[in-house]
Length: 161
Image (cartoon, rainbow, N blue to C red; front, top):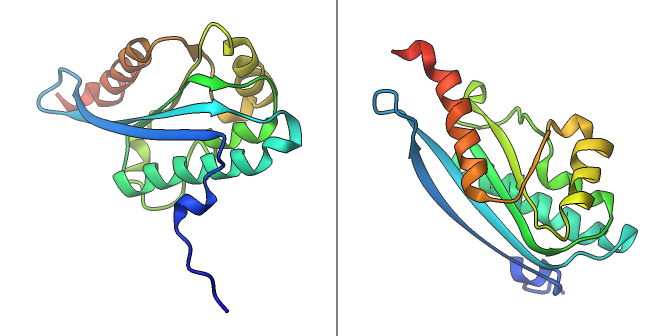
């Protein structure tokens, strides 16, 4: 017998997530960047105990990027109790998808936001251990991340004028 299930049946009970998006003007003609902020809170289990949670969050990240054809995805982990566990790294992988992204050349990337409490652990995960993620900085402010996205967008579209 097949059991009827929803996506909520797969959400780890220790995690809450939500997202909101915006089109951000970059100041060049009428060009805007499509950006979603994914807010993740709760407790991320240490080590291999966090494997299911990491895989679930990767699925949410890929879903958002694919369905909404984003230029950047801001992942706000300030409210996440995280100490260690490498499966969280997959929330920002792959940096370049070879699928239906609106224009792969316009993909600016993932921006990771941490708190004073977890930013060192996140830096170790994304910037040291996971160098191939392309993440070079852990922000502590969404506004700072958005500012860097706009700067990258201006560089990307500077020849459009």
